Length: 83
Image (tube, rainbow, N blue to C red):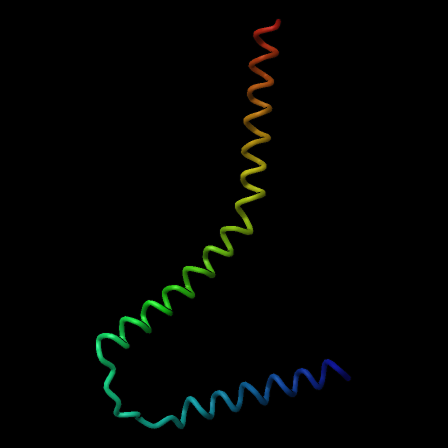
């Protein structure tokens, strides 16, 4: 039952969004260089923060793997010197 309600809500929201996008009229507004650069900076900031968050999620396991690999390599060299 819950799945059906969620499905109906998602379908309704998508239909409303599509209707609004299709029926939008022109604004005939002036977007100056200050507003344009500000909007561009905000959009690029959001995109950059998303990529940074994704990178941060993967960085710790990668760093741990590199550290483990280097420790194994140094242990192997130490064993060769002691032999």
